[in-house]
Image (cartoon, rainbow, N blue to C red; front, side, top):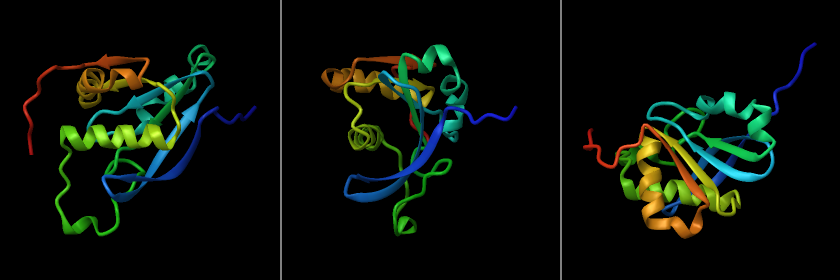
Length: 146
């Protein structure tokens, strides 16, 4: 028998540092918000197994999104007029803008690789806004690259 997965995907318009972005978000489940941050060059599909796991989605509202310039999210209007640089500051603003737009109250933030590194910074700077972090392949220091 054919069945739909419990995952819902849709777009949300989010203002990030004064620019309107069209961000693709997938989610499944109910309960404590769990915001998932994908690795560089990937997208929210990285977390589809979690969003299909009954043990997880019975306790958590699992939310995963495609970063701007990744997956199904689109760059802001006139994106070609300036070079995209993902800095620590801009990455933090993307994450926090999205969780505010989705009204995620004190989420647990899970990140892998580049997402794992940024959850450490989130915990250091914004611990009062979150329940906790899960860092996968986290590193307290990673030299930048172009």
